[in-house]
Length: 142
Ligand SMILES: Cc1cc2nc3c(=O)[nH]c(=O)nc-3n(C[C@H](O)[C@H](O)[C@H](O)COP(=O)(O)O)c2cc1C
Image 1 (cartoon, rainbow, N blue to C red):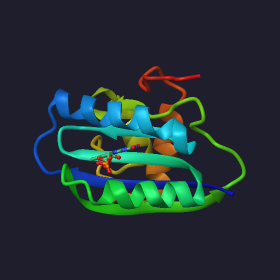
Image 2 (cartoon, rainbow, N blue to C red; image 1 turned 180 degrees about the vertical axis):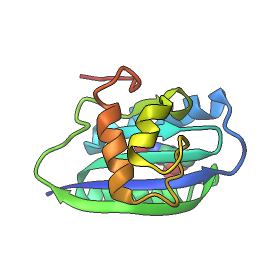
Image 3 (cartoon, rainbow, N blue to C red; image 1 turned 90 degrees about the vertical axis):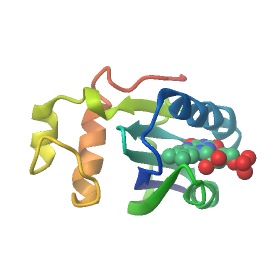
């Protein structure tokens, strides 16, 4: 049974590229073994991640990630059973939210700035769906 989980969190320290790289390296090394796919979006202070895969695998990974001290205020925005993956081509795609243009942010939010903690999970998911159609998601694996 496939599920999709969306969460947001706050970085415990302003994110520098070495931290982002370390997380993506861990993700890309480990996720294929457990059949996890998804994308990780980051800004200087915020992470938004989608995890897709088997229910056990997604829940286990989420529990591990939630304990990671590189972030805090980890909040589940949505969790659903799915018939098919949307992010199947990414062992962990990567999006720099600073590069997302203002009109796309305004389409789904009140301001041209993404605040997943005050936006509905559905709106954040719609924004990520639309991002998938742009070249902003990098790290395609298949
Ligand atoms: C925002 C964020 C996203 C992460 N995403 C993943 C991921 O998709 N897959 C993964 O294996 N680890 C991910 N990690 C790293 C895990 O929290 C953990 O450090 C890693 O799985 C190694 O766990 P271990 O020390 O038990 O081996 C993420 C960490 C953070 C802070």
